[in-house]
Image 1 (cartoon, rainbow, N blue to C red):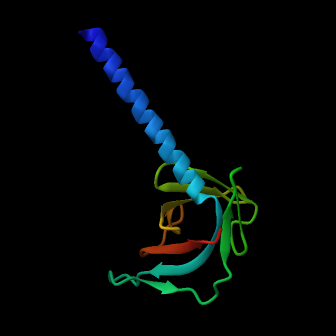
Image 2: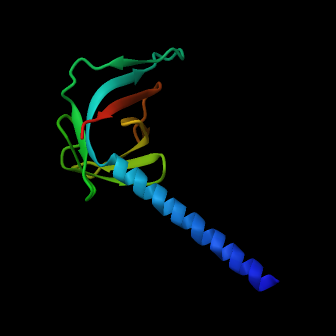
Image 3: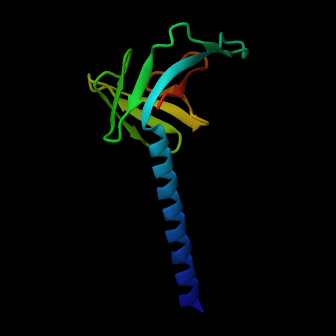
Length: 131
């Protein structure tokens, strides 16, 4: 009976790891491509924060499969790494690393700085997938 339980336990572990790999791949593949900044979330400190449309919609970032990231206002010559299901680490050209909490849903990417630099009040950037 014990060998059967051990085999069952091993099978569950293998299946759960394969689902994690599949989820990681889906997350990575949905991040690839060009994103246009559409809105910025600001909270003045009273809990009444809201999303505001950006005036200049020409700001964009692009994530490449090889770990490179580029943008026309930030992230020049930078690299990125998905650390876990909610954390994206971006290494800038000057070798500093900024982490962001991120979420992708319905062709929308939301990023909020998480460390080492944080917003004093809640803040985030919303991007729309271009390609």
